[in-house]
Image (tube, rainbow, N blue to C red; front, side, top):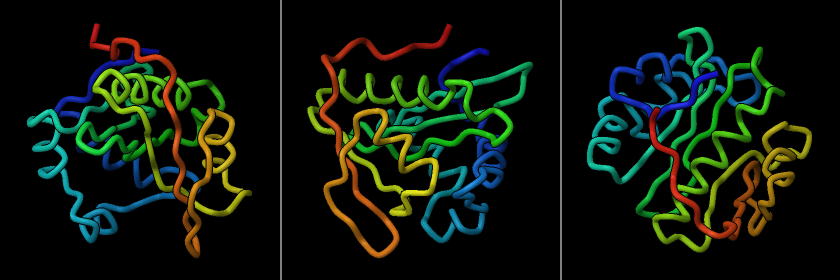
Length: 155
């Protein structure tokens, strides 16, 4: 497994991966309706307001995560179904959390499904996140990061 920063050339494959997740897939059209496009993500990464990492196995992107350094949000974490349970999501989440903490955020946040049967719900709780608000089908989670450590850089 190889972990590295996301580059602009990775975005087509990342958008395909996001649509292929098991429990919470978002198609390009779904994301476009949220004003999330390859161009908008590339711009955020270029401006360095966001930073993301990916995991590759034999040249294939199998997971990725992106954080927003302007708000302290973990924006997205996605792993292909056939690579779940291998620690990839945990590694990516830890990397984004560390980067956000190193950027000065003392409280991190994200939204996820309110369904406790969904993998994401229990995954985040297992990693120290706490539900602070509940909507019809979403929960808002927060986490106080551990002592900041340097964010991972590409090899």
